[in-house]
Length: 93
View 1 (cartoon, rainbow, N blue to C red):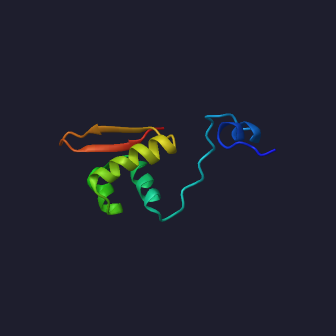
View 2 (tube, helix red, strand yellow):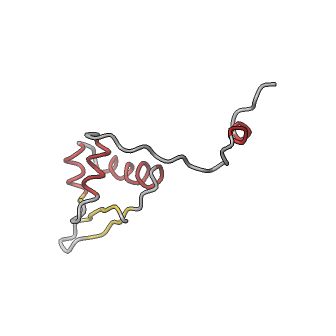
View 3 (spheres, helix red, strand yellow):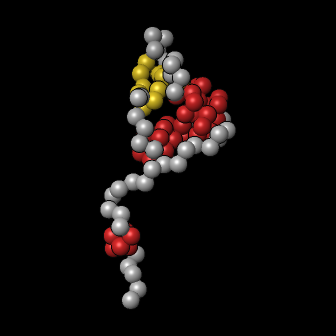
């Protein structure tokens, strides 16, 4: 008897639907690793610093922060404005 794909296949494997598997560690030297290193600094990181480190445009970085870091990795990001009006981003503990 063939198994069905989708929900019943997840149930058959013993995993609950909707549970996430732990994310693997980030490889050294990748753009993702560079972004995470900048976001974990005590002084935070500006969008300009992130753009310079990766070569990406603003909209690409914002999408990466939202999609890959917040949604996929489950990290909590904090954003705020400095006294000079520049927005900074930081990974919350």
